[in-house]
Amino acid sequence: MNVILNDRPASASYRAVFLSDVHLGTRDCRADLLAEFLRNVTCQRLYLVGDIIDGWKLKRSWFWNAHHDDVVNLILRMGRTGTEIFYIPGNHDEIFRRLLPHRLEVAGIRLCGQVEHVTASGKRFLVLHGDEFDSVVRYAPFLAMLGDRAYTVALVVNRWFNQVRRRLGLPYRSLSQWLKRQVKGALMAIDRFETAVADEARRRGVDGVICGHIHHAVIKDLDGILYMNDGDWVESCSALVEHHDGSMELLDMTDVRRRTGAPSRLASFLFPAGA
Image (tube, rainbow, N blue to C red; front, side):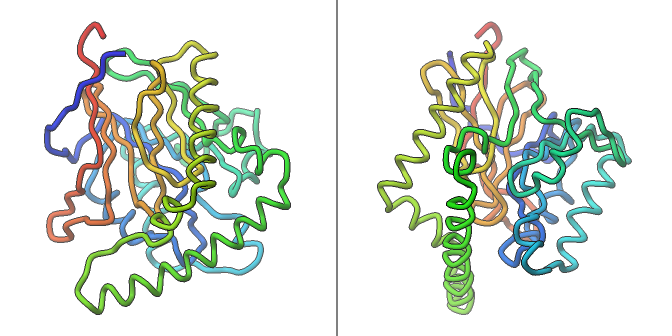
């Protein structure tokens, strides 16, 4: 697969936007940044790639503020103004999976188990949340819940860490993401997940896969399959976008310039014509 770097500046108008792992209903959801992002973009298609609402957390305790309302209202407004919206439930909002495989559309939002996205350049991508390729979630739900509790503790520490950084005039940095990068087991688990998802895309005969679930935003070529993870809105605060020419870009909203609403660019790839 011929993939070249595209160093064009970010645009506010996209052919498609992919978001996942927002975890509305939790204190660590950066709904404020996501609402800012949504106010500053337009797109033909919006893909909500799972764990948009955190049903696991809401079962234990209720947390919802004005920023969470803003996110929901902005998504609904996009649907009313012509954006096609696809909701692919994840493991934290698995309650919506009970409505599948029936075709369901509410307020312009289509509920799907998986979808195939075709870019402007004709590339085909399988779009799914990805938890079905996570052996812990799939085969040991109890262990997954224990892991979720430990992750919650890490996010609480992360919240205090960034409060101190704000008081010192320093930008947001994800301590929990840094900790994951230092743990060999976590890196190995990420590699196994990426390989499994890419293998499924290869089996389906598509050009690549777009997913979420592991909160690790990245674009990479895995033996001819383009693996793209759009990250999350708890740690990396990132979104995957397709430009109108079919190029794919990963945007980082943690260092968003609040006066302009312009995100920084994590990675950008262009498929040349005929590639």
